[in-house]
Image (tube, rainbow, N blue to C red; front, side):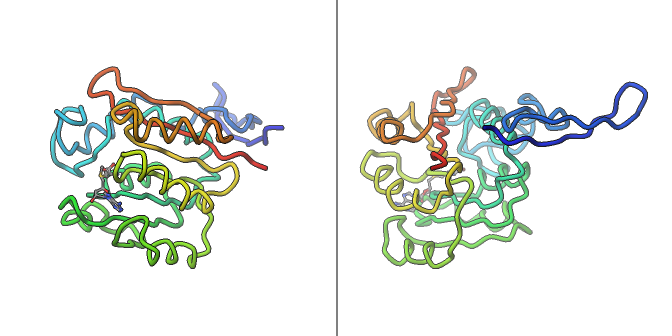
Length: 233
Ligand SMILES: C[S@@+](CC[C@H](N)C(=O)[O-])C[C@H]1O[C@@H](n2cnc3c(N)ncnc32)[C@H](O)[C@@H]1O
């Protein structure tokens, strides 16, 4: 049975009224998808050709704004339970910055081989945001051991490094054990890399993960975000 959460809103007379909402209800006090998208657009993309949006630069985000915004809106329904964040493939830290803006994570772990060159601005993008960065390949034994030794169960894991099948498959096998039951897995480029991220996502669903949604841009490049949820038991 879905757990309940309570929100307090003011009625027309200004009197506070408590409502019990189902677990996945939209919080009436939360941002709309349009508001989330406006924030992302303002942040700036790696390039508008590759990722859509209206402004290149800023945090150099490598996501399509109209894919990421509805994904965040969906996850915000579970905001109270999303505290620990692992991102594999962080680059400038753009996705981490945007997610953290909406979720104010307690723990952030970033893995990157610093191969793209955007690590040079990560410190600036993530200034003031406490995180642990593990620098190396995601399948390197030392990196995997470091994550295991942290003893953290993550509520949201983002896979956004290389999008070929072998890599996404390997990363999901390595890092899914650190996703708590009921936690969310975000896979990038499910449409752009149908034989890579797309195929790996399909196999995870066939193996029992729930497909929450696949977000595909209607305004810019169709990259594709797969949002999956780990079974509770
Ligand atoms: C697509 S970018 C990440 C974009 C970022 N998530 C965002 O939304 O702005 C991929 C990053 O993953 C890193 N990377 C690629 N393959 C990797 C691997 N096997 N292990 C760790 N990092 C990797 C690259 O150097 C790059 O910084």
